Length: 176
Image 1 (cartoon, one colour):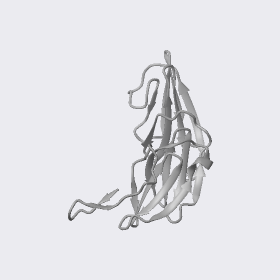
Image 2 (cartoon, one colour; image 1 turned 30 degrees about the vertical axis):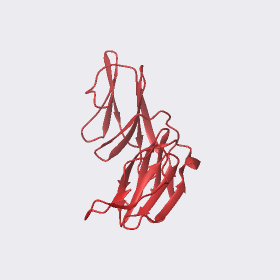
Image 3 (cartoon, one colour; image 1 turned 45 degrees about the horizontal axis):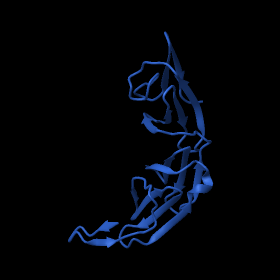
Image 4 (cartoon, helix red, strand yellow; image 1 turned 60 degrees about the vertical axis):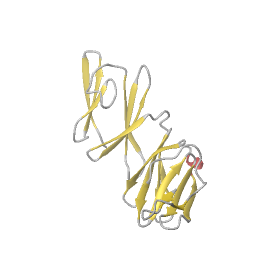
């Protein structure tokens, strides 16, 4: 729904969304959003739907968060990520499966998906240009700063991930 800032009345409304709607990404007069199994782009002024993509075919689950990724909008989903072109909604990529995503982190130039369960914490580094998962690290340990879950920590530049395993700490470089 868009409101007219001059009078606060509804300027336009879309009925396209299901019960799960991502945050909004704005660009070039279009507002983009994920809605469960769909990716949409609406004209900001008129509400006319410009992009409507069946996101379910990507098999990365329902959309939770959307964010601006240059010429694309990236979607963090239940089981990975997908990215779509802002220009025409064409699919740029889907990641490999990473089931059970609970959060994401962008640290320095690196992007991470995270899944945390009662007994373990797993983090996956994702190349935002290609959608390739370039590495995963799992820890059942305790420790770290807490920001990235139990047993894992990431340096402030995003280049290294530490895994706490009992009395041992492992240092892993992100990248290729």
